[in-house]
Amino acid sequence: MTVVTRFAPSPTGFLHIGGARTALFNWLFARHHGGRFLLRIEDTDRRRSTEEAVSAILDGLSWLGLDWDDEPVSQFSRRSRHVEAAHRLLDEGKAYRCYATQEELAEMRERAKAEGRGMLYDGRWRDRDPGDAPPGVEPVIRFKAPREGETVIEDTVQGTVRVANGQLDDMVLLRSDETPTYMLAVVVDDHDMGITHAIRGDDHLSNAFRQTQLFRAFGWEAPAYAHIPLIHGADGARLSKRHGALGVDAYRDMGILPDALVNGLLRLGWSHGDEEIIARDQAIEWFGLDRVGRGAARFDLDKLLSLNAHYIHRTEPDALVEMIRPDLERAVGTDLDPDKTDRLIRAMPELKPRANNLVALAESAAFYVAERPIAIDAKAAKLLGEDARSALAGLLDALGALESWEQEEIERAIRGFAHGRDTKLGAVAQPLRACLAGTTVSPGIFEVAAVLGREETLGRIEDAIGAGDREARDP
Image (cartoon, rainbow, N blue to C red; front, top):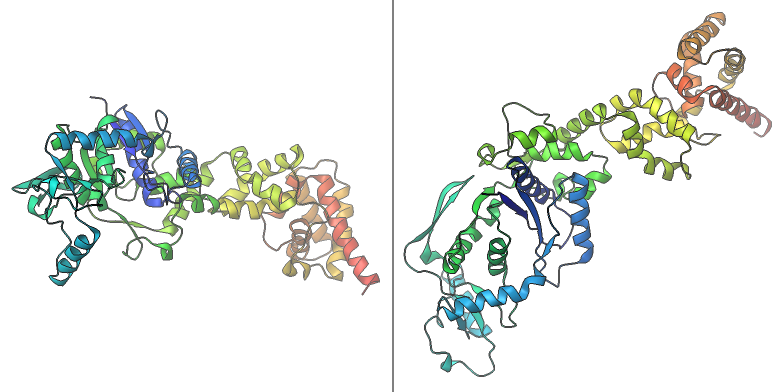
C-alpha cells in the first residue's frame, strides 16, 4: 500500500500555526513511508474563501519547505461529484429528502435548549412520504444514520474511541440549493484521492464518527485516523493571539528561519527521546505516529527563538546575507553592491552569534552598509566630544600610515596610539566605535575596521571629525 496523506485547509485567512503543524505531520509521515502528500483547498464556503487566503496558504507551505505532490485540489470544483454521491445514497435508501421548515428547526433548537441537551434533528422526515411535503419548501438531503449500536474508531493517536449511534442524528448531506456540506465533501474527496491516513487536529475527532458512518454507507474503506492534540500556549490555555502571532507569515516577518519553525512545530506533540535539535532529513527518518502524545502541546516563543538562534548560528554567512538583503536594501534605500555584500559576508561570523532572529541580525548589520555620513545615535554622539575628536584626528594619521589593512595590524596601531597618548584603550576604542558603527554596541572594533576596509574606515573617522568642526563653527 502506498501511503497517501493530505492537508486540507479552509482558505479563510493565513496559514495558522496549528495548521502548519498538521501539514508538517502529514508531510513527514508521507515522506517517511515514501508515499504522497496531497493538498486540498476546502473552499466550499464561498462567502469566506478568498484567493488571497489560498495564496497565503501556498506561500506559507512553500516557505516551510513542505512540498506537495500533484496540483492542489479545489473542493468547490468537485461539487458535481459530491452531488452525485449524495444522490447515490438517496437512490439506495441510505438518505432521504427532508422538508422540515426553518420554523420547525428553530422549535427543535429551543426545545433542546430548554431541556439542557444538544440539538439533534428528530428524524421527522426519515420515513415520511415525500407526498406530504409542504408547498414551497426546497428539501435538504439527509443521511439515514444508524440508530442502534455504536460507531468505533481505532485512532492511531487517541486509541479506541467510540460513540453511541443514538447520539448522532441524520446529518445534512446536500443543502436545499444542492451545495454539499463539509461532511459529505470530505468523505467523497478522501475516497477519490485515495487518502490512506487522515492526520488532523483532535477537534475533528467528533467529525470522524459521522464520516466513518458515511464511508460505510458508501461501501468504502475509511482512512486510518490520527487526531493530534491541539496546541496550547505556555500557560496551558488554548493558543490565541495573546500568546503571540498565530500565522506562519508573522513568524517569517519576525525573522524566524523556516527550518527553525519546522523543528519547533515538530516538537509540539512529537518526540524522539531527548532530542531537541532535529534536522529535516532526520525528522523524515524518525517520524512515526506512535510518538505523537495525547496531551496538548505547549508553544513557547522563547524556546522557538532559542532554536532559531541555533539555526542562524549554523547557517552559512552568504546564505544569511541573502536572507537579510531585502531588509537592508530597504533600510539604506538602494541595492547592495558587491563590495557591501562582501563586507556583510565577512562580518557575519561575529554578527550571527549575537542574534536570535533575522530582524535583529539585519539591524545589527545595517551599519556595515550604511551610506556616509552614517547616522550616529544619541548615546554614541555623547562619546564624540572635543577631546575624542582630537584623539580621532591623531588616530586617523596612525591608521592612514598602515601599509597592510589586516585586523592584527589595525589592532596593533590602535593599541600603540592609545599607549603613546598614555590613555586607556577604551578612551580611543569607544569614540572609534561611535564613528564607525554609529552606536555604542558592535562587534570588536578591530574587526569592524578590518571588515569596513581602509577607505570606508578612514572616511567615517573624517566624517566624525568634520561634523565636530562644523558644530564648532555653527553653534
